[in-house]
Length: 191
Image (cartoon, rainbow, N blue to C red; front, side):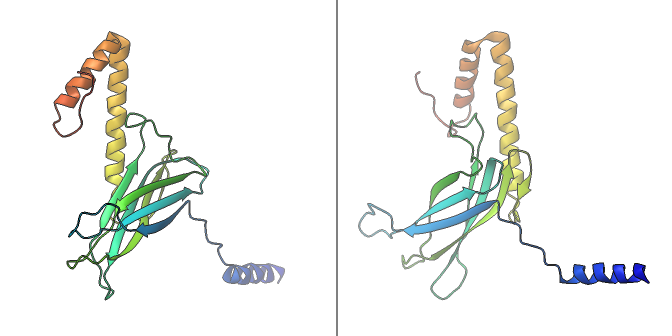
């Protein structure tokens, strides 16, 4: 009899136990502001200032935000994807540190009459430094994020190997040649 009572008690407790919601690892907030210095006769496309706060104990290497829009009648409008991918080869910014705040401004939307549309940004995907991921990844941008990081890692390893075998001058030549071989991918300075 005790066995059945214990089972019943545990079962009932399980029915009434509520899962506490997990905290969001990244919080997204935003403000919308009019553009500055808009030429006369041009629509004033609003600027959306995204603020992301990393609540997790891990640094984030990448995030994807989907910025949707809604017109005055509640009809869905255009959507834009904004992405940030961190790799030391790209820039010298610090990664999106645990507890840190990252801000980025993106253009909003206007309708055909030039009226601003309501912005609806949503955090869609986050890749953390330990390889863990968060978010629905509705547009499957995680594949692009990972491809960018794999490409950057491959380039960094190749340049490091060249540095060790042929020195800094060979690395500089390789970088300048690569920049010239990809028109529109960037420019070289100090020619």
